[in-house]
Image 1: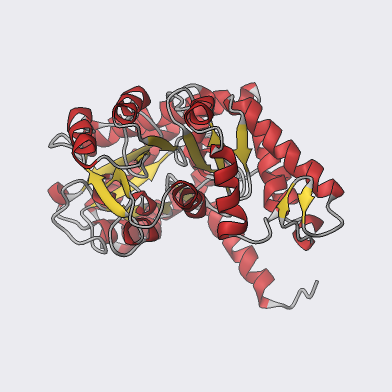
Image 2 (image 1 turned 60 degrees about the vertical axis):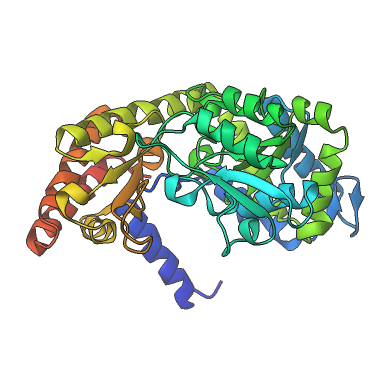
Length: 412
């Protein structure tokens, strides 16, 4: 290793930044040292196009064992008959499901980005999901909640081949049973994207979609605390609807969308799945929700309006219109104080996406650091102080020092 290479000094700088700031972006987390060791291992050297037992390159005997271990751990943890661990991230995983089951121009139905859905759930025109397929988008109601009757009516009207249930900025539980009824009523596939809530599902603090959906996709970082990768799971219900479903999805991943899988990432996924199967992880998942509830209550009592009035899961959205401050301005001020959130649109947002009216924050990463309810009260207090004085440089610096001291008490 060339220690003079500036990349390594930059990595150290980023390590220090993470150590002295509070990561409150709900899609970010800290992987364990064991996960990082696997991802940084010699496995990054190996091409392994194909699947275990059916590779196109030689030298994959041990690689097959590693990938099978990841697959079997996922199957056991989620109670599913088939898992593909090769997608490089969540978006390719969702794309593989669409390309495996649909033809260009077929209809998909998903949650609108403006209501808390994901780009790959059919956002029109600028994404593959809205460009190559007919996109039907459902939204939240005037209370910012999913209206299952309205979703059912929309499904009956347009009869999509796939209905996607999953969110990136929705602070309430998803009723997978109701989505299942809607999909079954029109003989559509139901795909549950649990990228954000996968750790909560494992911990039993959010309902599991496995009994209701035909396909379940998820990323492997976020609340799972693994590396940046993804998985596609086919359920018993999915195989009952289409016995060839697993093969169709596998072919869509490879050779349809990807070449060689990242086996170093897959090894990291295997490690994360083993960690997620422990009682300690379930305790962690429960604490995420407890922390989120306290943080939401404190923010509400501090005068902030939270979308839907609170949270059932790991995240919350703050509507900042009452404070007369934009989401981007708020996120920048909070970063200067060592509090890392992201600007985010709120449902029915009158402001453009690049200058939204809200911020999104959550508790997975601070919970990984060992923080609990008392620390959530402190964090809420610091957020109130920052957003009351977003342009006061001295105030922000003083709060930043307070945040550093809190981080020192709870090291990564």
